[in-house]
Length: 378
Image (cartoon, rainbow, N blue to C red):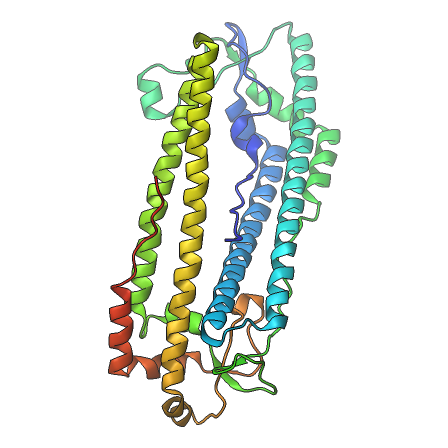
């Protein structure tokens, strides 16, 4: 599976600009309130969030499309004994490009966060020093109570004078910081959108590229339409969700075990450390193997399902072509998000026709009952 969800959100929004210091009795400022009140900080955070959400959508869409193309190519292998050479090459090129774009994106975000941190930390240090000199004080940090429960428990009580507003005013009037924010917001974010070149649909029996602009259908879209293959789709989704939950629970246990080891590390002997590290590595190896097993299951089971839909349509080709008023009905392997196929899309008509065939509906329902979830070995 190619998709790697993009989670490198604007970390300074949550983490704060400077390490916290002990609350002062006479003078303090709140990092949380400073961030929420600062116009400049709000501007750069809002810009980052908008771009981040856009990129996340692009990454998810492209990753899913690459997976779908891979599944369709595997289905073609099962039905015809070969994968269309040109489309297989395109899949490999797009997957490689996706990985490179992902690396570039993460490098861009890392640099953006570091530069933003540096700009705001530098400005904050400068204005804290100026305020301390002007007022003859020593500023500490103190955060307000965290919600109703925090207030009830007396958490975050701040004694003394709050200088947050003065710092916000000074920072938002800082021309050097404003220029840095403008430059950061003006940067062009890398994109993760592949070109959308229509592919040739392939012949249903041989898998060879069709010429011209023929009518075609997409087995992937027939599966997702729910018209005829809903029981199969539900079985696939349930099998994946169940295994994914099992994998996530095992990952959480592993992280807990790692935290416990870190806390106990100094109190353990060298032999005990070696044994615990071996246990953690064995856990990690099992998790990696389970993740690979889940991915392999999804790919193989989806490909087999698409091949079955293809087979059922091919068995009714004469009736389909008569119903559609089209000859030489082909199969489109490339999803729309990568460009789809040239010609005329008759997927909805094919799905509706297959749904009206009782034997096909029964065959797919029976097949759905044979689908078993992956064995992760956890």
